[in-house]
Image (cartoon, rainbow, N blue to C red; front, side):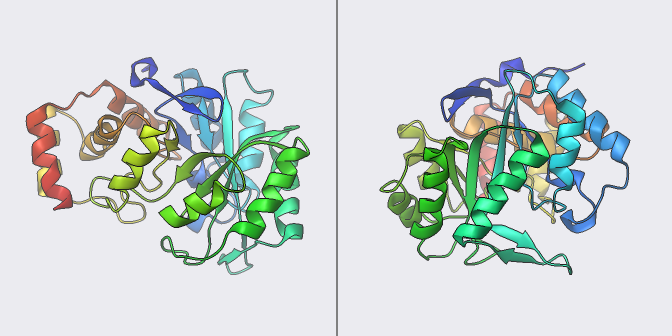
Length: 288
């Protein structure tokens, strides 16, 4: 079995986690809604991920809803002392599988308690507030009120650390006036690089950056340059895309997701790939 010890670690809150983690979103059904097609396989994926050295799992109770957290609890509870589970709040799912903002004090408090119950935890290690001003990407808008709710829940001992997701640099700066921010989770990958400067700024302050859609999301990365570099290395394009992220900056924590053990093993193997300066130079063409 492949392990990821050589992927390095970085601080997430006050915990050191391995930089190659696991995102649980794909454990739910189609469209991140409803039960998985193969629940036993979903459980097996989680157990193999942890057995392989993954100690950072990203989830949310609005995946399903409730589905991924219930599967995580069934597969891994009681949790090992090294495992850090990160969740998100700020949205609810409609009956039509829509993604809807949920920023009120009542909604956020309920979301935290739902995560605690469905994961089987007494306290949540990290809770990311997902900004929903634009579902498709960051957009300006005040996060002061919902952040204060999470800060109050942190004061009550239900949350240890707070992060942000789908946010702008201004929102991060404003948020830090209310509470310490442990991590930022935005869309970022080899082709989608609007956050280049933000990543470097966060790295200089020791703040983790967690890219979602590291492989392009619902439309996987497509590039002849990426495929060419992968062929030279005897790897898959997606493995090279993950390896590039690991080499991009030491504060990047990866959470590629999958519902297949075979695909999980491919993802974990990306930690073994070291890209040469020539390969890195060629890959810059993908963003250009």
